[in-house]
Structures are given as structure tokens and as C-alpha cells.
Length: 150
Image (cartoon, rainbow, N blue to C red):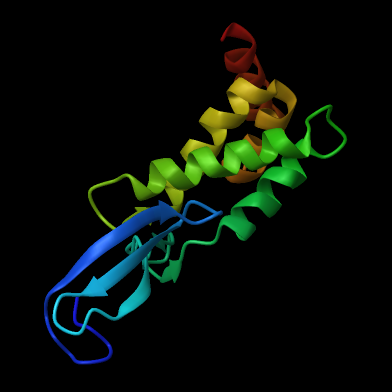
């Protein structure tokens, strides 16, 4: 870290602490040449995550878009907003912890179904009916039977 006053390349850290939102680290530094003090803020730079759609298009991952779909599936169910937020966080974390910065929409859909299956079977069936594009009642019944077994 170069000193902003004299441009000397050697500084020492006097104090280091996490900022209030825990996404930043505040460091108090001192230049070894001019002894002036200054503060720096450090944050982790995450790679942008992209979703590859069925038609091959790539778009940035949006937790807001994900949340809208999950909220629709959970509508009029006894599911707290906190539970929905936790599901969205879990899915985003799983998607970002992959080896690549791309995830398919199919993988995202499967992650949502896995989370909803644990949270609420009705919300899971609602989401699955749209995601899997059921063509007839037989497919719907088959999915309900599979969910009931688990």
C-alpha cells in the first residue's frame, strides 16, 4: 500500500477492524517514511455470476428476480418473509460457490425446488408446476405423489 502523501511503498497497519456491515475491513495505517496516518477500506471482490438461459442467452444473476418467483410460489402460505429471504440466500450462496461464474437456469430451478421441498410442499408443487411446465393433470399428480413420499 503506497502512502497517499509521499507515495512511499511501505506502510504498516496500526489497527484493523470489520466495519458495521461485516463486508468491509477498516485499516488504520502509518507511512514508514513520513509517519502520516491514513485509513483504508478493504472489501472482497466477488466475481459476477451469470445465468445461462435455455436459449443460450447470458444475463447477470438477480436475487431479486429469484425472490419474485419464490414469493409467488409461497403466496398465501404460512411462510415468513424471513424464511423466504433465507431460501434466496441459500440458493445464491450455492450458485456462487461453484467452480465457474456461470450457472444454468435449469440448475437454479432445481436449487429452488430443493429448497422449497424442504420449506413447504405446497409452495414446491406450485413452483414445480410452472418450472416443469406440466402439460396435463397426470404430470401434476405424479409430482404430488413424489412429494408426498419424501
